[in-house]
Image (tube, rainbow, N blue to C red; front, side):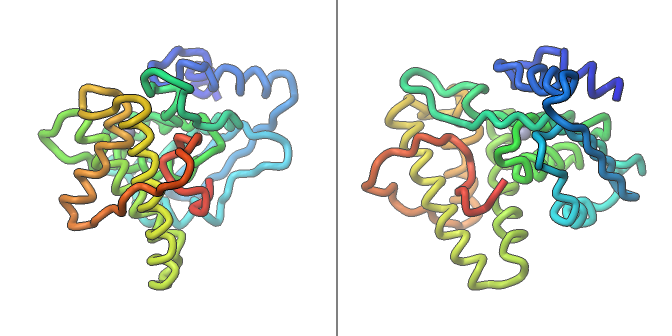
Length: 238
Ligand SMILES: [Zn+2]
């Protein structure tokens, strides 16, 4: 709990909206509730809105899939359940407040910090890849992030399809269109064109990683531009 509180107060470049602090204050005032989950591989502490709970049946098998940490210490997850959604700004650059929902240290069990309800499972997979030392070596930070994010999305699609190939195809079709459409909005609306723009590492950088895996993305839809800047289609859940 000490680390949880300390981290709630610390400012982070990834959390400029101070969603962690707001959530912690909500817990202190009794508006939000503390939950915990413990299994041999992991411990999760979470501050969540009333009526929400840690999706144990969802996250338990994910920890099993990653297996024990290199040090043998359990994975530690601290989840600040802010309900603030990811949205593209009306104009200007796409920045951390429009995109990020978690952070951790590479190759470490010190803690995975998640600070939104939205896409919490996708963020957990993304941060577990970092914590489990699975970043591609010898790459720049934007390429590492784009690679880890792409794999997190592929793992989420596989996980949500529960072994059914037809379901995987259906979910992937929706996700691929979502990637194409959010990338299009980032590029055309917010000038995200290369890895010198922050949004590239989570959005447009994915296109090159998918291409390197031989996975083609569709053309962007002709319909209205997306307002949500979440990374995955809502059908994949939070
Ligand atoms: Zn990352």
